[in-house]
Structures are given as structure tokens and as C-alpha cells.
Image 1 (cartoon, rainbow, N blue to C red):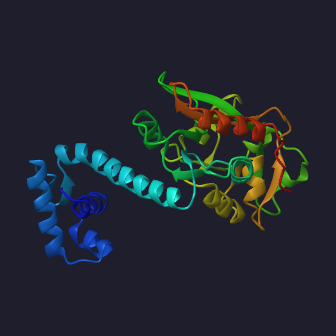
Image 2 (cartoon, rainbow, N blue to C red):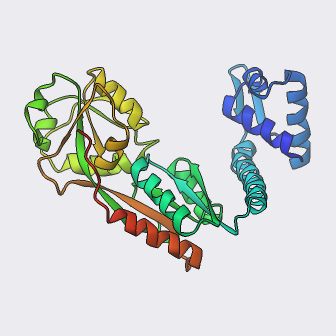
Amino acid sequence: MNLRHLRCFITVAEELHFGRAAERLHIEQSPLSRAIKKLESDVGARLFERTSRGVQLTWAGKVFIEDARRILLVIEQAKGNVRAAAAGFRGRLRIALSDGIAQARLTALLALCREEEPDIEIRLFEMPLSQQLKGLKNDLYDAGFTLFDGLKADVVAQPVWQDPIVVTIPPRHPLLAHKRVALREVLNYPLVLCNPETCAGCDQQLERLLRSIDSQPQVAERVSTTDLMLTLVAAGYGVGFSNAAYAASCRHPEVVVRPLADPSLAITTFLLRSNATPSEQLSRFIERVVRIGSRPATLAS
């Protein structure tokens, strides 16, 4: 088994099509097929099944894909550690990000870490929450950020940042008559909301908020990113929600941001880590996270 075969396997598993996988890998289909056959021989199981409907992972392939991705990630982390050591770093923290963490908060945190502990390398990894939780369990990451709080007992979820919820509104919209918008007023219009599969935490917190109002929301679209939400709001598909810190860092020229009438309504960011005692290095990082959280968010206007 070698790394090239693993990369071929992962690409075919993602595309479920040998032709498209070969194009992504910039190779012909014949050597790609040989690489998959060699890998199947090495692991002792068929990884793909070809049918008239296309290519599908076998059960063994579905089990192996997680291990294959983890192996490649560990190899990449090892390369990164060597490069960091050669550049003069004396330690590193691996931080996972899910749910579209506010850029302004993260920028301030990274700047503070570079200022106070410049010999510690911080590596960031963006991923879905499910992958972050697996990585924390398998010691692939030291900590992570998410907006989701319904977690298992083996993961510590510490609330660290709270940012007021704001409403994103297209130009010439009736809601612009209000300097602060009542949540019940927002629900009179179509909404552009988070996709629960890709933004589990944001969706969880907003759904909890919407259930507090005795009114059925009209959902125009579900989106995976705040950028796409702002694009659809600007185009008039509906109104959306964001937190003040994220809205301040993602200004859109055709979107107006208004605070909610109830300033206590906020989105909470959680810092995740395993329930083991954190290292001194991680403890200092967490202390900086809390300090950044004490700073007020700036509302976009």
C-alpha cells in the first residue's frame, strides 16, 4: 500500500466515476484502475462495485474511506510539523473549524497568539462538525470551534463567544423602516436559512430561536455558507440571519444589516476539546480565546 494508491482510492470514492477521477488526478484511466486493483489486493477486499448504474463503494470501501482520509491527514500533519520545526517553531496547535466561525474573532485571536507566543505554530482545518468530532476523538486536532452544543460526554464544549444576531435585508425592503427589527416582523417574509447538513450548529441555534415565535417561517432557500446567503438576500430571495461579528467581516454592497429589537438574542460559539486535561500550551490558547470573547462585536451598517 502506498500514498498514491490511497489518493486514487479517495478520488474515485468522491467522484464515483473512474473517468472523472482520472481527470482530477491528471492520469489515464488504465493506470488508475491498476492502482485500485493493487490497493484492493493489499487490503484483501473489493472496495468498489461496478454496476450498470455506475460505480459504488462496497461496505468494505465505506469502512476504509475514513481510515484512508485519516492516514493522509496524519501524513500531511507530519510534513507540516517538519516544515514548522525547520522554520523555527517550537510547538503547534491543530485547530478545527466548523459552521462558519466569525472571521473578525478568529483574526483577532490569531494575531494575539502570534504576538504573545510566536514560537507556537497554529494550523487551521475547515470541516463539517462530524469530521471535527472524529478528529478530536482520534487526536488529530487539539481543539475546535463550532456553533453546535448538543455534544457527547467525551467532548468538552465551552461557550466562549457570544455575538448578537442581526438581520440581513435586501435594498428597498419594508423591514428597512425599522432601526431595530422585531423577530416576529422578520417572520412575515421569506427566509434564507442555513443548511442543517453543512451548518449544523448555526441551523440548531436559529431553529431554536424561530421555534420561540408562534409562527411558521417561510423558507425560500437553504444555503451552506454565509456568503451565499448574502448573495441570495441581495438578489431579493428573502431575508437572512447572521451574527454581528460575521456580518461585520462579510459586508455586501447590496445588503443592509439591522440588529434585532431584543439585543439578548445571540449566537454562541463553542470551543471543543477532549475531556482530557489540556496541555499548558492549549490552556494558554483557551485563555486567549476567552479574552477575545470579552471584546464586543462590531455591528455592520
